[in-house]
Image (spheres, rainbow, N blue to C red):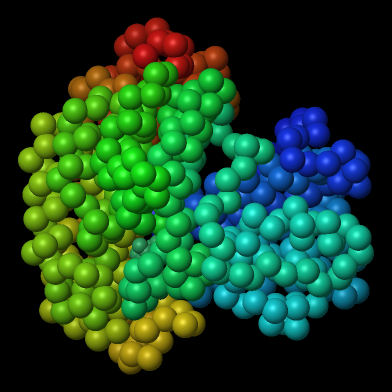
Length: 474
Ligand code: 5AD
């Protein structure tokens, strides 16, 4: 999904020396602090949880501001130009002569991979540049930094396997992100991901299930399977499961109450995935299926590998399910050569499908992509107009769909509590946000809430049952 969200690793108590980390290396960092800021998708958020885990196992302590940190890390996103620029504005604070100068500053993730060593020239205050495919080498890179090396890089893209670590420090205590596939082999004309995250690597079914069981033991009740193209997952082990098989098996892990997965590519979206949802109550009624554009001509130019009609067949299959599955999508407006007529086809697709949520973006030409060689024909002003039109249409659709839920009882996982408002914030199986008067003790519990009113982006309700515990009460 394409929302640019920012999270800061929350301060948590230090780990004891963790497996695989020598006492000597943990001692080096004892008492030292790090600040880690994340830009971009859930994959980046989860990567940061892994990076934070590795650092904490070495004795580093997370802090909430870069002023208090010995090491400052930015986990970056380069999906659109604006996202990529954010890191350069952050780095300004550490230029020579500024108060932050002299700290260790590292750039991780997609911008690091994309810029590579040039980063050291563009921003001499940077000591570490590391793309996500090189995260398995992070401990080694940190060793080099700790022994005084000023320029350290991890830019290999051809790494085998995934960055798996038992040290991962998850920010959320109830919902656990779990990577099942890394990288991307698609070559969508607009997208940098294959260049920044490397080729597809699936984790084995046995490893994934083992981790799910461990997560349940740790108290997590919701598991969100992650992959840039999550449904391109193929079991590399002899078991040879399909993605739908994996969904079913994860859903059956005792103690799991909710399973989500993101992001699916329409090209790999099979009826078996819908069947798995239909027959496993713990699989959430939610599918994110980015369409990008409503016109087959534009889809072809984007190299998406499906036509409007083929995409709509997948939607039809989802709509035929016994369960009411909520749908969300990503839209790009103003892609190279998108005519007014093409654009109208995006609008008509939105009106036909009636998504529950969309993430919409102006096309942004990116380095090393095929579209960089196309004529970026739609002016920025016109892209802005199209974006406003899309968002206004979708606002009306969401308002209508949400209002149809008034009077219904929905189960939510309570994800937070706002003391100032006395409001609990829950999320439904459809991934809708539902606010209701609650108590802090309910956070992490599943409760039934009656919807009393609805806006385009969230619901309001009142609790109809007492709180149930987490995993044990499934
Ligand atoms: N310009 C605009 N939006 C983009 N996305 C990916 N690349 C670009 C780009 N160059 C959007 C797509 C994708 C989401 C994560 O970001 O909609 O699904």
